Image (cartoon, rainbow, N blue to C red; front, side):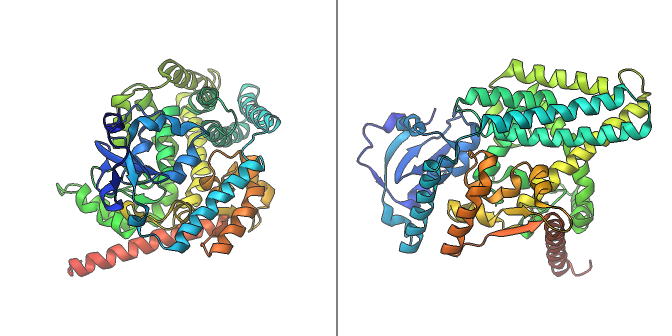
Length: 474
């Protein structure tokens, strides 16, 4: 429970400066601002959305709160109110104030247009199509002894898992159902049962990413960094992150390995993507069965709250491995090596299919220190890349493959908006960005991938130049 409730009555007339708010940036000492009101949410580990509340400790959460919550949710914050922010202390220029008012007005306009209302028919179709893919992959193994059919089945299964990721993503962002428990349970079906991913592991990681995309932690104790770019010692997305190898290798044991990986990271990028699903399966299993957590953010949540749906999560993951074992073994016909090969082909192809899409969404885009982040709109737009058709990939194929995340910028601005409304919203967002001179980037699958590889190479080159300057004998 946050400490605000202890002070709420006597603090209603207290005024705070922005500099004072920015001193409180850790989970144990967390102040946040919403509409110029200050709330003390220190140690609020019972927050319904998990530890994501601490990503904006010492910052303004007005717009990210609107992006994540249904109308009326601010009522739960009253108990944490401790006073008011002195607006002038933020020293925002008039142009910035008008810009923020502009994008809040755009959000209100989209609500009136019905852009946040989902289509039951669309999601019934998507769910049915996905189950059709699964049934086809199973039939290709059950009814055939042809190796080519089995390879095709494994690749189709990998694509099925990728498409399940987009469905779980939509349901767990509460784009489909107004009642959040319905979205959670459906997310467990598409996440835990069909993919083997823990719903709560994913929500903790993904909500944190949405709140602070491409941000580096402001301090070792803060929880305001993006977990999706916490990829050291394998990949460094900025020179600052590459320089952190000194902290990771303080004992000197892993220094050579870390330097080697940073130097050649552009070449290791795709091999790492192939293994990504194995890592996610491992982290999900540990989270669901209480065997550890992948980040400090997740550890805090598991220690203080535990799983929201422990029986459903664990049962879903257990049943996932039952049906995957049955399919990978050819329903008892395959040898051990053949079964392992089938599983690895499906798993590695899925890791590639998934990571290609969300990797293009943010990798190689702007990164910031959390304590120097821009406003909500500029943060989401400048750290994100939309994916278009091109280089032989027609737009309709990109739309299907990416599951709505081809409009990654628009999704990040409005994460609770159903994917079938993003195309209409995209035109309004693009127009708004042009009006206010905000950089808005798009690329096709091929050009976007080259941008990511070029960015990794540039970070490597900058890192090596620094090392040579620091250690001339290199």
